[in-house]
Image (cartoon, rainbow, N blue to C red):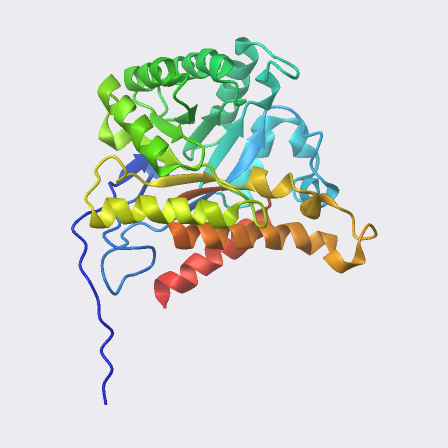
Length: 315
């Protein structure tokens, strides 16, 4: 006897958003069903994976992570080039950690110089990410948006405290904004409304729901992302019908479990595999929740995640 699995049709859809320019540009979003539910709708654009590059040599990355890159971590442009040419990243996510006013507080000129160098080194889409200080990010991201007006950058994090300044710069130079809110569906919707009222186009917004790593709030992250996707597909909530951008690598590799050496606690297993698997499992969970763009740190974790997507897409 044939078993027919009941299916449903969804009245909403996720907007397709094109990132970057030229031959290496790609489109994310466009789904008309829940992630990988291709028996109920379309998933025309597969999730994309990028690797994070810092403007300064990392001081808090464990050896198991640094070892994947070698000496290039001293040069952001060379690092970015390796991420693309050798490691196969779909895009590069440049974090301007050195501009943090609570740390080195490097000037806007430093950020522009590094962003230009990285942009010249790669031909794939580029994200420029601030330090997390809303006021400093407003200065830095505005300057970078103008300096790289010939590139369709993704810029973020754009938050309620600086959306006017950064959103206006993105609008002026045709960049994509990454609207970042702290794991809350209502705040995510509200920020998108504000950006829309400012004039930011519907094809230039990505949702950053803010994510937790495995064992550190991942379940709550999943719930909020799932609610965002459900509202977009089943309630036609056009303020949530945007692809989701997940900056997950930093959340995994800042945990003690990812950093501890193997001789510190034998129960945690092989340190060369532990952090990689933690990052890959986090990525798999976020993919199931609706992630369209994923920023990772370890290239092996990215490879494993890409293989998972390939398997799900081909059945």
